[in-house]
Image 1 (tube, helix red, strand yellow):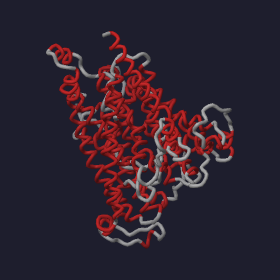
Image 2 (cartoon, chains in turn purple, red; image 1 turned 30 degrees about the vertical axis):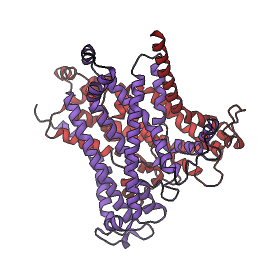
Image 3 (cartoon, one colour; image 1 turned 90 degrees about the vertical axis):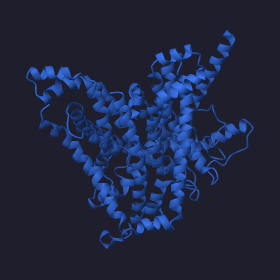
Image 4 (cartoon, chains in turn cyan, yellow; image 1 turned 120 degrees about the vertical axis):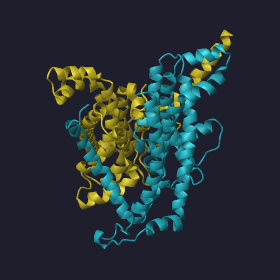
Length: 293
Length: 274
Protein backbone atom coordinates (compact mmCIF):
# COMPACT_ATOMS: atom_id res chain seq x y z
CA UNK A 1 0.00 0.00 0.00
CA UNK A 2 1.34 3.38 -0.89
CA UNK A 3 2.15 5.81 1.80
CA UNK A 4 -0.81 8.05 2.43
CA UNK A 5 -0.74 11.52 3.93
CA UNK A 6 -4.24 11.13 5.30
CA UNK A 7 -2.87 8.76 7.95
CA UNK A 8 -1.53 11.75 9.86
CA UNK A 9 -4.95 13.35 9.98
CA UNK A 10 -6.24 10.22 11.66
CA UNK A 11 -3.40 9.67 14.10
CA UNK A 12 -2.02 13.05 15.04
CA UNK A 13 -4.90 14.78 16.85
CA UNK A 14 -5.29 12.24 19.63
CA UNK A 15 -1.57 11.54 19.85
CA UNK A 16 -0.95 15.25 20.39
CA UNK A 17 -3.65 15.40 23.04
CA UNK A 18 -2.20 12.34 24.79
CA UNK A 19 1.27 13.87 24.80
CA UNK A 20 -0.25 16.99 26.30
CA UNK A 21 -2.32 15.32 29.00
CA UNK A 22 -0.07 12.40 29.89
CA UNK A 23 3.52 12.73 28.75
CA UNK A 24 4.00 16.38 29.59
CA UNK A 25 2.53 16.05 33.11
CA UNK A 26 4.70 12.97 33.73
CA UNK A 27 7.84 14.89 32.77
CA UNK A 28 6.71 17.72 35.02
CA UNK A 29 6.23 15.18 37.83
CA UNK A 30 9.84 14.04 37.40
CA UNK A 31 10.96 17.63 37.63
CA UNK A 32 8.98 18.34 40.81
CA UNK A 33 10.33 15.16 42.41
CA UNK A 34 13.83 16.69 42.27
CA UNK A 35 12.75 19.87 44.07
CA UNK A 36 11.85 20.67 47.65
CA UNK A 37 8.62 22.37 46.61
CA UNK A 38 6.04 22.67 49.36
CA UNK A 39 2.45 23.82 48.86
CA UNK A 40 2.89 26.35 51.65
CA UNK A 41 5.71 28.18 49.87
CA UNK A 42 5.72 30.13 46.62
CA UNK A 43 6.62 28.22 43.47
CA UNK A 44 9.61 30.49 42.82
CA UNK A 45 11.10 29.67 46.24
CA UNK A 46 11.64 26.01 45.35
CA UNK A 47 15.16 24.59 45.28
CA UNK A 48 16.65 21.80 43.27
CA UNK A 49 17.55 19.03 45.71
CA UNK A 50 18.66 16.23 43.41
CA UNK A 51 17.65 12.80 44.57
CA UNK A 52 17.24 13.83 48.19
CA UNK A 53 13.49 13.19 48.13
CA UNK A 54 14.07 9.64 46.97
CA UNK A 55 16.72 9.11 49.64
CA UNK A 56 14.30 10.42 52.24
CA UNK A 57 11.64 7.92 51.21
CA UNK A 58 14.00 4.97 50.97
CA UNK A 59 16.07 5.54 54.10
CA UNK A 60 14.15 7.73 56.50
CA UNK A 61 10.47 7.30 55.86
CA UNK A 62 9.39 4.09 57.56
CA UNK A 63 5.81 4.77 56.49
CA UNK A 64 6.87 4.57 52.86
CA UNK A 65 8.13 1.02 53.33
CA UNK A 66 5.02 0.20 55.30
CA UNK A 67 2.81 1.49 52.48
CA UNK A 68 4.80 -0.41 49.85
CA UNK A 69 4.62 -3.59 51.89
CA UNK A 70 0.90 -3.49 52.54
CA UNK A 71 0.20 -2.39 48.95
CA UNK A 72 1.95 -5.46 47.60
CA UNK A 73 0.30 -7.67 50.19
CA UNK A 74 -3.07 -6.12 49.37
CA UNK A 75 -2.55 -6.68 45.65
CA UNK A 76 -1.43 -10.30 45.97
CA UNK A 77 -4.13 -11.20 48.46
CA UNK A 78 -7.15 -9.65 46.74
CA UNK A 79 -6.12 -10.79 43.26
CA UNK A 80 -5.62 -14.37 44.48
CA UNK A 81 -8.97 -14.52 46.23
CA UNK A 82 -10.76 -12.73 43.41
CA UNK A 83 -9.28 -15.13 40.90
CA UNK A 84 -10.27 -18.34 42.69
CA UNK A 85 -13.69 -17.07 43.73
CA UNK A 86 -14.23 -15.68 40.24
CA UNK A 87 -13.26 -18.97 38.67
CA UNK A 88 -15.68 -20.78 40.96
CA UNK A 89 -18.50 -18.41 40.06
CA UNK A 90 -17.65 -18.66 36.36
CA UNK A 91 -17.86 -22.46 36.62
CA UNK A 92 -21.16 -22.20 38.49
CA UNK A 93 -22.60 -20.26 35.57
CA UNK A 94 -20.97 -22.46 32.94
CA UNK A 95 -24.01 -24.75 32.51
CA UNK A 96 -27.67 -24.59 31.56
CA UNK A 97 -29.52 -22.22 33.90
CA UNK A 98 -32.94 -20.70 33.46
CA UNK A 99 -32.73 -16.91 33.27
CA UNK A 100 -28.91 -16.93 33.19
CA UNK A 101 -28.64 -13.51 31.57
CA UNK A 102 -30.70 -11.94 34.31
CA UNK A 103 -28.70 -13.57 37.11
CA UNK A 104 -25.44 -12.56 35.53
CA UNK A 105 -26.58 -8.98 35.16
CA UNK A 106 -26.70 -8.75 38.95
CA UNK A 107 -22.97 -9.50 39.03
CA UNK A 108 -22.36 -6.22 37.21
CA UNK A 109 -23.65 -4.12 40.09
CA UNK A 110 -20.58 -4.13 42.37
CA UNK A 111 -18.28 -3.38 39.46
CA UNK A 112 -20.01 -0.36 37.98
CA UNK A 113 -21.42 1.25 41.10
CA UNK A 114 -19.57 4.47 42.01
CA UNK A 115 -16.69 3.20 44.22
CA UNK A 116 -16.30 6.23 46.45
CA UNK A 117 -19.98 6.21 47.27
CA UNK A 118 -20.42 2.48 47.80
CA UNK A 119 -17.40 2.53 50.12
CA UNK A 120 -19.40 4.79 52.44
CA UNK A 121 -22.30 2.34 52.37
CA UNK A 122 -19.80 -0.34 53.37
CA UNK A 123 -18.64 1.90 56.17
CA UNK A 124 -22.21 1.93 57.45
CA UNK A 125 -22.60 -1.83 56.97
CA UNK A 126 -19.31 -2.50 58.77
CA UNK A 127 -20.09 -0.29 61.76
CA UNK A 128 -19.42 -2.18 64.97
CA UNK A 129 -22.49 -0.98 66.86
CA UNK A 130 -25.19 -0.72 64.22
CA UNK A 131 -23.72 -2.25 61.07
CA UNK A 132 -25.82 -4.82 59.28
CA UNK A 133 -22.88 -7.25 59.03
CA UNK A 134 -22.53 -7.51 62.77
CA UNK A 135 -26.31 -7.81 62.96
CA UNK A 136 -26.13 -10.88 60.72
CA UNK A 137 -23.15 -12.23 62.70
CA UNK A 138 -25.18 -11.80 65.84
CA UNK A 139 -28.12 -13.71 64.37
CA UNK A 140 -25.78 -16.54 63.51
CA UNK A 141 -24.39 -16.55 67.04
CA UNK A 142 -21.00 -14.95 66.39
CA UNK A 143 -19.54 -12.15 68.51
CA UNK A 144 -19.40 -8.58 67.17
CA UNK A 145 -16.33 -7.71 65.14
CA UNK A 146 -14.65 -4.30 65.15
CA UNK A 147 -14.32 -4.32 61.36
CA UNK A 148 -12.65 -0.95 60.95
CA UNK A 149 -10.44 -1.09 64.03
CA UNK A 150 -6.65 -1.15 63.75
CA UNK A 151 -6.41 -4.94 63.64
CA UNK A 152 -9.09 -5.56 61.03
CA UNK A 153 -9.22 -2.42 58.88
CA UNK A 154 -6.93 -3.71 56.12
CA UNK A 155 -8.86 -6.97 55.95
CA UNK A 156 -12.12 -5.03 55.68
CA UNK A 157 -10.78 -2.91 52.83
CA UNK A 158 -9.74 -6.13 51.12
CA UNK A 159 -13.21 -7.56 51.73
CA UNK A 160 -14.79 -4.59 49.98
CA UNK A 161 -12.32 -4.79 47.10
CA UNK A 162 -13.07 -8.50 46.70
CA UNK A 163 -16.79 -7.78 46.76
CA UNK A 164 -16.34 -5.13 44.11
CA UNK A 165 -14.05 -6.95 41.69
CA UNK A 166 -14.69 -10.67 42.10
CA UNK A 167 -17.41 -10.29 39.42
CA UNK A 168 -14.80 -8.75 37.10
CA UNK A 169 -12.83 -12.00 37.23
CA UNK A 170 -15.98 -14.13 37.07
CA UNK A 171 -17.32 -12.44 33.94
CA UNK A 172 -14.01 -12.52 32.08
CA UNK A 173 -13.33 -16.15 33.01
CA UNK A 174 -16.91 -17.07 32.11
CA UNK A 175 -16.44 -15.51 28.67
CA UNK A 176 -13.21 -17.48 28.35
CA UNK A 177 -14.93 -20.74 29.31
CA UNK A 178 -17.73 -20.14 26.83
CA UNK A 179 -15.32 -19.61 23.98
CA UNK A 180 -13.41 -22.87 24.52
CA UNK A 181 -13.67 -25.42 21.71
CA UNK A 182 -15.74 -28.54 22.40
CA UNK A 183 -13.79 -31.20 20.49
CA UNK A 184 -10.82 -31.70 22.85
CA UNK A 185 -13.27 -32.41 25.68
CA UNK A 186 -15.07 -35.09 23.74
CA UNK A 187 -11.70 -36.63 22.96
CA UNK A 188 -10.36 -36.77 26.52
CA UNK A 189 -13.68 -37.96 27.93
CA UNK A 190 -13.64 -40.84 25.45
CA UNK A 191 -10.14 -41.58 26.71
CA UNK A 192 -11.62 -41.95 30.18
CA UNK A 193 -10.44 -38.74 31.84
CA UNK A 194 -12.38 -37.55 34.90
CA UNK A 195 -13.99 -34.10 34.75
CA UNK A 196 -11.43 -32.90 37.28
CA UNK A 197 -8.56 -34.12 35.12
CA UNK A 198 -10.14 -32.51 32.06
CA UNK A 199 -10.34 -29.25 34.01
CA UNK A 200 -6.76 -29.43 35.25
CA UNK A 201 -5.08 -30.53 32.04
CA UNK A 202 -7.36 -29.04 29.41
CA UNK A 203 -9.45 -26.12 30.66
CA UNK A 204 -6.77 -24.32 32.67
CA UNK A 205 -4.09 -24.45 29.95
CA UNK A 206 -6.58 -23.36 27.29
CA UNK A 207 -7.72 -20.47 29.48
CA UNK A 208 -4.18 -19.38 30.26
CA UNK A 209 -4.11 -16.19 28.14
CA UNK A 210 -7.49 -15.06 29.43
CA UNK A 211 -6.47 -15.80 33.02
CA UNK A 212 -3.22 -13.89 32.66
CA UNK A 213 -4.89 -10.82 31.18
CA UNK A 214 -7.59 -10.78 33.85
CA UNK A 215 -5.10 -11.20 36.69
CA UNK A 216 -2.73 -8.52 35.44
CA UNK A 217 -5.52 -6.00 34.81
CA UNK A 218 -6.75 -6.57 38.35
CA UNK A 219 -3.24 -6.42 39.82
CA UNK A 220 -2.58 -3.04 38.24
CA UNK A 221 -5.89 -1.68 39.48
CA UNK A 222 -5.38 -3.08 42.97
CA UNK A 223 -2.05 -1.32 43.23
CA UNK A 224 -3.58 2.03 42.23
CA UNK A 225 -6.54 1.85 44.58
CA UNK A 226 -7.51 5.09 46.30
CA UNK A 227 -11.26 5.74 46.30
CA UNK A 228 -12.50 2.75 48.32
CA UNK A 229 -9.83 3.21 50.98
CA UNK A 230 -10.48 6.91 51.17
CA UNK A 231 -14.18 6.40 51.78
CA UNK A 232 -13.72 3.57 54.26
CA UNK A 233 -10.75 4.54 56.41
CA UNK A 234 -8.77 7.40 54.79
CA UNK A 235 -5.69 5.30 55.44
CA UNK A 236 -6.36 4.83 59.13
CA UNK A 237 -6.66 3.98 61.89
CA UNK A 238 -3.07 5.12 62.35
CA UNK A 239 -1.47 3.91 59.14
CA UNK A 240 -3.20 0.52 59.13
CA UNK A 241 -4.63 0.98 55.62
CA UNK A 242 -2.20 3.53 54.26
CA UNK A 243 -1.61 2.00 50.84
CA UNK A 244 0.77 3.72 48.44
CA UNK A 245 -1.76 6.13 46.93
CA UNK A 246 -2.86 7.08 50.42
CA UNK A 247 0.74 7.69 51.47
CA UNK A 248 1.27 10.03 48.53
CA UNK A 249 -1.92 11.82 49.54
CA UNK A 250 -0.72 12.23 53.12
CA UNK A 251 2.75 13.46 52.15
CA UNK A 252 1.55 15.93 49.56
CA UNK A 253 -1.85 17.14 50.60
CA UNK A 254 -3.11 16.00 53.96
CA UNK A 255 -0.73 16.34 56.90
CA UNK A 256 2.29 17.87 55.27
CA UNK A 257 2.51 19.82 52.06
CA UNK A 258 5.68 18.15 50.81
CA UNK A 259 4.86 18.07 47.13
CA UNK A 260 8.47 17.24 46.23
CA UNK A 261 8.54 14.15 48.39
CA UNK A 262 5.05 13.12 47.33
CA UNK A 263 6.16 13.41 43.72
CA UNK A 264 9.14 11.16 44.38
CA UNK A 265 6.76 8.64 45.91
CA UNK A 266 4.49 8.96 42.88
CA UNK A 267 7.45 8.20 40.62
CA UNK A 268 8.18 5.05 42.63
CA UNK A 269 4.54 3.99 42.30
CA UNK A 270 4.83 4.64 38.59
CA UNK A 271 7.82 2.29 38.41
CA UNK A 272 5.92 -0.60 39.95
CA UNK A 273 2.88 -0.01 37.74
CA UNK A 274 5.03 0.28 34.62
CA UNK A 275 6.67 -3.06 35.37
CA UNK A 276 3.29 -4.75 35.69
CA UNK A 277 1.93 -2.97 32.63
CA UNK A 278 4.87 -4.17 30.55
CA UNK A 279 4.11 -7.77 31.46
CA UNK A 280 0.41 -7.26 30.79
CA UNK A 281 0.97 -5.76 27.37
CA UNK A 282 3.38 -8.50 26.35
CA UNK A 283 0.78 -11.07 27.35
CA UNK A 284 -1.95 -9.27 25.46
CA UNK A 285 0.22 -8.92 22.39
CA UNK A 286 1.09 -12.59 22.38
CA UNK A 287 -2.48 -13.75 22.87
CA UNK A 288 -3.93 -11.32 20.34
CA UNK A 289 -1.49 -12.17 17.58
CA UNK A 290 -1.86 -15.83 18.52
CA UNK A 291 -5.55 -15.61 17.71
CA UNK A 292 -4.74 -13.77 14.51
CA UNK A 293 -6.86 -10.80 15.57
CA UNK B 1 -29.19 -41.44 40.31
CA UNK B 2 -31.78 -38.94 39.20
CA UNK B 3 -32.24 -37.83 42.76
CA UNK B 4 -28.54 -37.31 43.22
CA UNK B 5 -28.42 -35.22 40.08
CA UNK B 6 -31.34 -33.15 41.35
CA UNK B 7 -29.64 -32.54 44.67
CA UNK B 8 -26.46 -31.52 42.87
CA UNK B 9 -28.26 -29.00 40.66
CA UNK B 10 -30.09 -27.64 43.66
CA UNK B 11 -26.82 -27.11 45.52
CA UNK B 12 -25.31 -25.26 42.56
CA UNK B 13 -28.42 -23.11 42.23
CA UNK B 14 -28.30 -22.25 45.92
CA UNK B 15 -24.65 -21.22 45.53
CA UNK B 16 -25.55 -18.97 42.61
CA UNK B 17 -28.36 -17.44 44.64
CA UNK B 18 -25.86 -16.76 47.41
CA UNK B 19 -23.41 -15.07 45.02
CA UNK B 20 -26.16 -12.95 43.48
CA UNK B 21 -27.46 -12.00 46.91
CA UNK B 22 -24.06 -10.83 48.16
CA UNK B 23 -23.49 -8.82 44.99
CA UNK B 24 -26.84 -7.07 45.25
CA UNK B 25 -27.13 -6.67 49.01
CA UNK B 26 -25.07 -3.48 49.53
CA UNK B 27 -27.12 -1.75 46.87
CA UNK B 28 -30.38 -2.98 48.42
CA UNK B 29 -29.15 -1.77 51.78
CA UNK B 30 -28.47 1.64 50.24
CA UNK B 31 -32.00 1.85 48.91
CA UNK B 32 -33.46 0.69 52.21
CA UNK B 33 -31.37 3.12 54.25
CA UNK B 34 -32.29 6.03 51.99
CA UNK B 35 -35.93 5.66 53.01
CA UNK B 36 -35.25 5.38 56.75
CA UNK B 37 -35.54 8.08 59.37
CA UNK B 38 -32.44 9.12 61.23
CA UNK B 39 -33.18 6.84 64.19
CA UNK B 40 -33.96 3.86 61.99
CA UNK B 41 -30.66 4.11 60.09
CA UNK B 42 -28.75 3.06 63.18
CA UNK B 43 -30.96 0.04 63.79
CA UNK B 44 -30.21 -2.81 61.37
CA UNK B 45 -33.06 -4.92 62.69
CA UNK B 46 -35.63 -2.60 61.08
CA UNK B 47 -36.60 -4.15 57.76
CA UNK B 48 -40.22 -3.12 57.34
CA UNK B 49 -41.12 0.51 57.97
CA UNK B 50 -43.00 3.45 56.56
CA UNK B 51 -40.64 4.95 53.98
CA UNK B 52 -39.77 8.61 54.44
CA UNK B 53 -38.82 10.93 51.58
CA UNK B 54 -37.08 13.28 54.01
CA UNK B 55 -33.54 12.24 52.94
CA UNK B 56 -34.21 12.85 49.27
CA UNK B 57 -35.73 16.22 50.02
CA UNK B 58 -32.70 17.13 52.13
CA UNK B 59 -30.05 16.23 49.56
CA UNK B 60 -31.69 18.31 46.86
CA UNK B 61 -32.64 21.27 49.04
CA UNK B 62 -29.89 21.41 51.66
CA UNK B 63 -26.97 19.83 49.89
CA UNK B 64 -27.37 21.13 46.36
CA UNK B 65 -27.07 17.71 44.80
CA UNK B 66 -28.47 19.09 41.55
CA UNK B 67 -25.41 21.30 41.15
CA UNK B 68 -23.08 18.31 41.45
CA UNK B 69 -25.19 16.28 39.06
CA UNK B 70 -25.07 19.15 36.59
CA UNK B 71 -21.27 19.35 36.94
CA UNK B 72 -20.94 15.61 36.48
CA UNK B 73 -23.08 15.68 33.36
CA UNK B 74 -21.11 18.55 31.81
CA UNK B 75 -17.77 16.88 32.44
CA UNK B 76 -18.91 13.43 31.37
CA UNK B 77 -20.66 14.54 28.18
CA UNK B 78 -17.89 16.76 26.86
CA UNK B 79 -15.06 14.44 27.75
CA UNK B 80 -16.86 11.47 26.21
CA UNK B 81 -17.73 13.30 23.00
CA UNK B 82 -14.20 14.61 22.52
CA UNK B 83 -12.75 11.16 23.21
CA UNK B 84 -15.09 9.45 20.79
CA UNK B 85 -14.29 11.88 18.01
CA UNK B 86 -10.51 11.89 18.44
CA UNK B 87 -10.26 8.24 19.44
CA UNK B 88 -12.33 6.90 16.57
CA UNK B 89 -10.21 8.75 14.02
CA UNK B 90 -7.04 7.24 15.48
CA UNK B 91 -8.68 3.84 15.75
CA UNK B 92 -9.48 4.04 12.05
CA UNK B 93 -5.87 4.89 11.25
CA UNK B 94 -4.64 1.92 13.27
CA UNK B 95 -7.23 -0.43 11.80
CA UNK B 96 -6.89 0.45 8.15
CA UNK B 97 -3.38 1.69 7.44
CA UNK B 98 -0.18 -0.24 7.46
CA UNK B 99 2.85 1.59 8.75
CA UNK B 100 6.11 1.20 10.57
CA UNK B 101 5.86 0.31 14.32
CA UNK B 102 2.09 0.42 14.27
CA UNK B 103 1.65 -2.13 17.07
CA UNK B 104 4.25 -0.36 19.23
CA UNK B 105 2.20 2.81 18.99
CA UNK B 106 -1.05 0.95 19.74
CA UNK B 107 0.42 -0.67 22.87
CA UNK B 108 2.01 2.58 23.96
CA UNK B 109 -1.43 4.18 23.78
CA UNK B 110 -3.08 1.53 25.93
CA UNK B 111 -0.25 1.66 28.46
CA UNK B 112 -1.32 5.24 29.18
CA UNK B 113 -4.67 3.89 30.35
CA UNK B 114 -2.87 2.08 33.21
CA UNK B 115 -1.37 5.25 34.64
CA UNK B 116 -2.19 5.60 38.35
CA UNK B 117 -4.30 8.71 38.95
CA UNK B 118 -2.49 9.34 42.22
CA UNK B 119 0.82 9.62 40.34
CA UNK B 120 -0.26 12.26 37.84
CA UNK B 121 -2.51 14.19 40.18
CA UNK B 122 0.40 16.31 41.47
CA UNK B 123 1.38 17.75 38.06
CA UNK B 124 -2.28 18.22 37.14
CA UNK B 125 -2.90 20.04 40.39
CA UNK B 126 0.13 22.32 40.00
CA UNK B 127 -0.48 23.01 36.32
CA UNK B 128 -4.13 23.70 37.06
CA UNK B 129 -3.05 26.16 39.71
CA UNK B 130 -0.56 27.96 37.48
CA UNK B 131 -3.10 28.25 34.68
CA UNK B 132 -5.92 29.26 37.00
CA UNK B 133 -7.95 26.26 35.87
CA UNK B 134 -8.50 24.61 39.25
CA UNK B 135 -12.16 24.00 40.02
CA UNK B 136 -13.28 24.40 36.41
CA UNK B 137 -15.16 21.95 34.23
CA UNK B 138 -12.61 22.47 31.48
CA UNK B 139 -9.73 21.07 33.53
CA UNK B 140 -11.64 17.91 34.44
CA UNK B 141 -12.79 17.43 30.85
CA UNK B 142 -9.19 17.65 29.62
CA UNK B 143 -7.83 15.41 32.37
CA UNK B 144 -10.48 12.76 31.71
CA UNK B 145 -9.26 12.56 28.11
CA UNK B 146 -6.15 10.87 29.50
CA UNK B 147 -8.05 7.67 30.20
CA UNK B 148 -11.00 8.00 27.80
CA UNK B 149 -8.98 8.46 24.61
CA UNK B 150 -6.76 5.35 24.99
CA UNK B 151 -9.83 3.32 25.91
CA UNK B 152 -11.80 4.58 22.89
CA UNK B 153 -8.93 3.94 20.50
CA UNK B 154 -8.64 0.33 21.57
CA UNK B 155 -12.33 -0.41 21.62
CA UNK B 156 -13.07 1.27 18.30
CA UNK B 157 -10.13 -0.30 16.53
CA UNK B 158 -11.67 -3.71 17.22
CA UNK B 159 -15.07 -2.63 15.96
CA UNK B 160 -13.64 -1.04 12.80
CA UNK B 161 -11.59 -4.13 12.00
CA UNK B 162 -14.79 -6.14 12.09
CA UNK B 163 -16.16 -4.14 9.14
CA UNK B 164 -15.10 -5.86 5.90
CA UNK B 165 -12.52 -3.81 4.08
CA UNK B 166 -14.11 -4.66 0.74
CA UNK B 167 -17.14 -2.50 1.49
CA UNK B 168 -14.94 0.56 1.73
CA UNK B 169 -12.87 -0.35 -1.28
CA UNK B 170 -16.03 -0.64 -3.34
CA UNK B 171 -16.98 2.86 -2.25
CA UNK B 172 -13.56 4.19 -3.24
CA UNK B 173 -14.01 2.69 -6.69
CA UNK B 174 -17.29 4.57 -6.92
CA UNK B 175 -15.37 7.77 -6.27
CA UNK B 176 -15.71 8.25 -2.53
CA UNK B 177 -12.77 9.70 -0.63
CA UNK B 178 -11.45 7.98 2.49
CA UNK B 179 -13.39 10.36 4.70
CA UNK B 180 -16.59 9.99 2.71
CA UNK B 181 -16.34 6.21 2.86
CA UNK B 182 -15.67 6.44 6.60
CA UNK B 183 -18.67 8.71 7.07
CA UNK B 184 -21.20 6.89 4.88
CA UNK B 185 -20.05 3.25 4.86
CA UNK B 186 -18.06 2.51 8.03
CA UNK B 187 -19.76 4.84 10.47
CA UNK B 188 -23.26 3.34 10.22
CA UNK B 189 -21.80 -0.14 10.71
CA UNK B 190 -19.74 0.74 13.79
CA UNK B 191 -22.41 2.84 15.47
CA UNK B 192 -23.48 0.05 17.91
CA UNK B 193 -19.83 -0.28 18.95
CA UNK B 194 -19.54 3.48 19.19
CA UNK B 195 -22.60 3.60 21.44
CA UNK B 196 -21.17 0.87 23.68
CA UNK B 197 -17.81 2.63 23.89
CA UNK B 198 -19.56 5.90 24.71
CA UNK B 199 -21.42 4.25 27.56
CA UNK B 200 -18.20 2.82 28.97
CA UNK B 201 -16.60 6.27 28.84
CA UNK B 202 -19.65 7.72 30.58
CA UNK B 203 -19.49 5.14 33.38
CA UNK B 204 -15.74 5.58 33.91
CA UNK B 205 -15.96 9.35 33.95
CA UNK B 206 -19.07 9.44 36.12
CA UNK B 207 -17.40 7.23 38.75
CA UNK B 208 -13.99 8.91 38.68
CA UNK B 209 -12.96 10.11 42.11
CA UNK B 210 -9.26 11.01 42.45
CA UNK B 211 -9.05 13.74 39.80
CA UNK B 212 -12.39 15.22 40.75
CA UNK B 213 -11.46 15.22 44.43
CA UNK B 214 -8.14 17.04 44.02
CA UNK B 215 -8.92 19.33 41.12
CA UNK B 216 -12.26 20.77 42.19
CA UNK B 217 -13.37 22.49 45.35
CA UNK B 218 -16.78 24.03 44.89
CA UNK B 219 -17.90 25.16 41.46
CA UNK B 220 -16.98 22.10 39.44
CA UNK B 221 -17.41 19.40 42.06
CA UNK B 222 -18.83 16.19 40.68
CA UNK B 223 -21.12 13.66 42.35
CA UNK B 224 -18.50 11.14 43.62
CA UNK B 225 -16.76 13.86 45.64
CA UNK B 226 -19.90 14.40 47.71
CA UNK B 227 -18.62 11.57 49.92
CA UNK B 228 -16.55 14.17 51.74
CA UNK B 229 -19.77 15.59 53.22
CA UNK B 230 -20.23 12.35 55.05
CA UNK B 231 -16.77 11.72 56.41
CA UNK B 232 -17.11 13.68 59.61
CA UNK B 233 -16.49 11.67 62.74
CA UNK B 234 -19.53 12.99 64.50
CA UNK B 235 -23.02 12.05 63.41
CA UNK B 236 -22.91 11.02 59.80
CA UNK B 237 -26.39 11.41 58.38
CA UNK B 238 -26.54 7.93 56.89
CA UNK B 239 -29.98 8.37 55.37
CA UNK B 240 -28.93 11.35 53.28
CA UNK B 241 -25.73 9.62 52.30
CA UNK B 242 -27.70 6.59 51.11
CA UNK B 243 -30.07 8.84 49.16
CA UNK B 244 -27.06 10.38 47.39
CA UNK B 245 -25.89 6.83 46.74
CA UNK B 246 -29.15 5.85 45.08
CA UNK B 247 -29.33 8.96 42.91
CA UNK B 248 -25.66 8.71 41.92
CA UNK B 249 -25.59 5.03 41.08
CA UNK B 250 -28.97 4.40 39.44
CA UNK B 251 -28.01 6.01 36.11
CA UNK B 252 -24.75 4.05 36.03
CA UNK B 253 -26.53 0.77 36.69
CA UNK B 254 -29.04 1.43 33.91
CA UNK B 255 -26.25 2.32 31.49
CA UNK B 256 -24.33 -0.80 32.44
CA UNK B 257 -27.31 -2.99 31.63
CA UNK B 258 -27.37 -1.52 28.13
CA UNK B 259 -23.81 -2.65 27.43
CA UNK B 260 -24.01 -6.03 29.09
CA UNK B 261 -23.31 -7.69 25.75
CA UNK B 262 -20.03 -5.82 25.37
CA UNK B 263 -19.05 -5.86 29.02
CA UNK B 264 -16.14 -8.29 28.89
CA UNK B 265 -14.84 -6.58 25.79
CA UNK B 266 -14.97 -3.23 27.54
CA UNK B 267 -13.36 -4.51 30.72
CA UNK B 268 -10.38 -5.87 28.80
CA UNK B 269 -10.07 -2.98 26.29
CA UNK B 270 -11.15 -5.27 23.48
CA UNK B 271 -8.51 -7.92 24.25
CA UNK B 272 -11.14 -10.56 24.98
CA UNK B 273 -14.21 -10.63 22.75
CA UNK B 274 -17.07 -12.76 23.94
